[in-house]
Amino acid sequence: MFDISRMETTERMSKVVRHNSAIYLCGQVADNSEEAIGPQTENMLAKVDALLKLAGSNRKHMLSATIYLRDMKDFAAMNSVWDNWVPEGFAPARACVEARMARPDLLVEISVIAAACSVKE
Image (cartoon, rainbow, N blue to C red; front, side):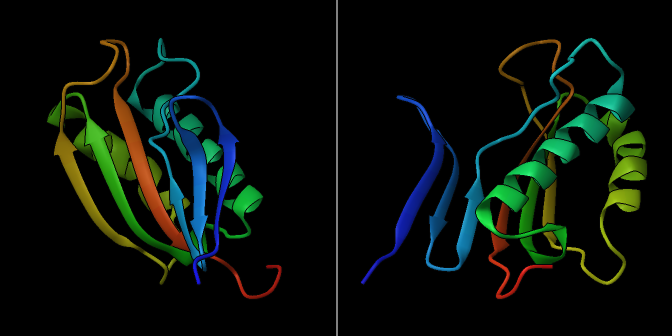
């Protein structure tokens, strides 16, 4: 039996899909795309935190993250924010690729898969 729930769903997509104990987040980008890579990354990761909480998880339960950068020249700056955000000992499997973004002002996007928490943390 499959237990699938969708959260914050529109006609195009769901921001969160939970299947049994797996949580899938749609791609997250910064709200203010006029900022530099550091602030865009911080804002994007805050949105990930909020969606994980909504779905019953947190960053310690991330399984996988795929990060898309408009330009690999921003790799070190993005990683500086990422490294401070990921709890020590809880780094997910991760890929980071250079990609053409949906809008030219976006510098970074992330897609996350996480496990649900068995208890509130």
